[in-house]
Image 1 (cartoon, rainbow, N blue to C red):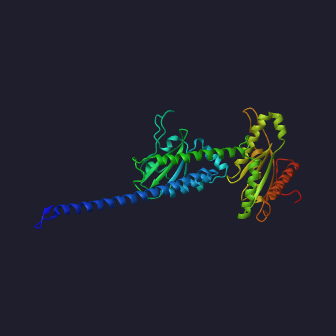
Image 2 (tube, rainbow, N blue to C red; image 1 turned 90 degrees about the vertical axis):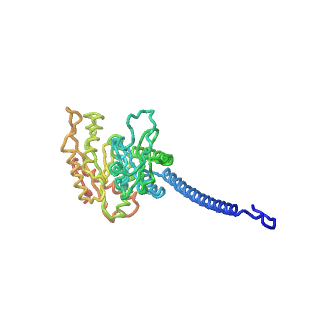
Image 3 (cartoon, rainbow, N blue to C red; image 1 turned 60 degrees about the vertical axis):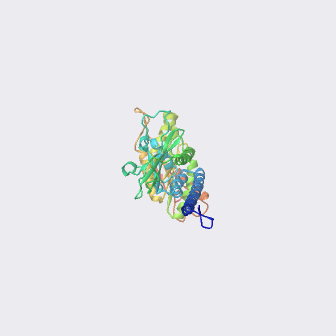
Length: 394
């Protein structure tokens, strides 16, 4: 402060400038704080939105009723809610057990091009050297995308991928596969990034996968004949209704074979029930060898088998039936190097052509099976070891 001629004090000009500078600084800091608060609020809202979407995703995959529904949800929803450019799923399937069962349950793998199966643990790409039962589980692998290193995990990779995360799917310290995430953003997945969130997400996915695969295995067991490994009557009864409805919609013919092993009691009396079981297994194998993957073979019980042929008119089905008959009759079945048996089968064939599948599917199925059974009886009456594809009255 300085004293004027009147004796009053006036503010020092330097002090006024200092105060103004301080006010400007405080205003700038306040503006920065407001901007920071707005940014934090936006991030909190974004994180809340992401968390909400992921919680909904978790509920969706937990409630998935079968393998295709679960895999389809993971591969279609996760890229959207996580704002990723590629998501794939790799499953460890030693011996192809999962693929075999899913094919038996009519899963169409072509519908899931981003589902990958490997038969060796090393193919997943994690650091597994010198692992023991007490070793900690492998950590996610994060870093820049390399087509040579990561091509197997992203077989249909879109152009421009920059960063990836390969996250192990773990169940009780066992690796069952890998959840593979990729982005065009080079900073999305870096080695320094925390992995708690993706590990948690992968743990939920792993639990759901193991549960669904276990349930599908149980379903497969319930629909499969334990002796021959082909479908059982429960499966074919359900499949008949489905295929009748599908044939009606798509207007194509379907055919049904009723197959019976001739004089099977004599086989059991000659080689024992153990030998008879081997004969049934071999007969099932020879029938299956003549069928397409779209067809279905089931053991109805005892020595009876049935075949459902998709998009097959009566003449085509009769031709296949004759090949099955000849394939069984023309080559003896070796039970041991010293013991071989010769068996034959009788086959009745009936078809449903477009326009014949109208009405109640259950009633149609009963009449259709009965028609094939009647023709099987005609084949036996005519001397066995033959195919009958026309009604006895025709």
